[in-house]
Length: 360
Ligand code: KG4
Ligand code: ZN
Image (cartoon, rainbow, N blue to C red; front, side, top):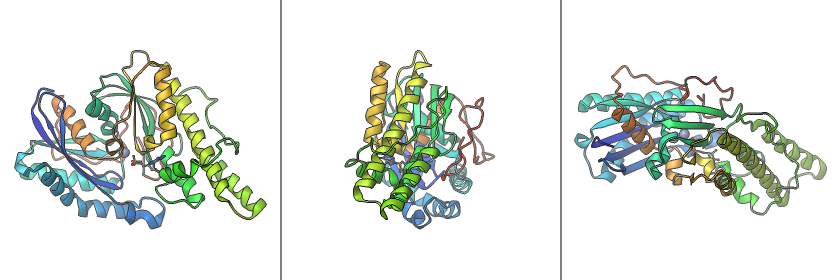
């Protein structure tokens, strides 16, 4: 880091409106503020994110989160040197709200603007939090994303594989819904699984027999639905124990799939400095333990950023923006919002789209 810069980051690609302020001075950058306003309550009744509601809420909240971030950092807008904003991929209305807000600020302040790829924000977070050096393997596992990325630099990503249907968080959420558990489903399923027997139900591990690092979770989710329906047909309902066993079985299957594919991804990539994870699903303790063991087997450090920086936030956008600016990249007012924006420009598009909109 050579350039001393204070960057305002803005994120609005899904259902979190976020602003952050990052200060870089030659050493590791400091996060002066990171504010996230979640929209969970607004979408709760619909069982998923409603793009129109999300876009409107972002437009209403963006000014507020920027103001809050400035207050937390005890700064004024005039002290901001540059503005970084998520320009995709994501729900177009939300991304557009953020890009428009960022353009307005950049124009009003006469400061540089840089558009950031949301996935690059996630993928570069281990550099911000742990100073991890390139190249490393990143597993992104959230409600909207699931992919293995080899990260060779701030703008050098190779996608080694990804989900061909649902993202794992999406599958956790659906399993919770079909078992009558609360949303977000991941923490609810993890809690219920504590009292469960992961071996009682014979659930599938899709795509394990296929070479490569692509993943699939939709068949697993359907198998849980079928097991539930069989219980209802046989005994008229699902007991507490049935629910715990189904949750434990589902969670074990997800962990098996991700662990095996992670080991395969690591084995094919010599010279890595570490194995990093990001995304809300990385909070799962059973999964974390399995991935940690996979990293240990490969004799690599395992890096899991703090949860607040694993899930959607604007500090990661400010950091990716900082690296882009340091590499000489700058955008002007023609910057456009992109619903799809693959990090690896050479990779074929993934089939999955998921509840959180189009994926790269
Ligand atoms: O990264 P994130 O906050 O948002 C995006 O999807 O971008 O991830 C949210 C997802 C939800 O699907 C949620 O159910 C899942 O992460 N999640 C978990 C856990 N905590 C959150 N999944 C499994 N186990 C958990 N403990
Ligand atoms: Zn995300």
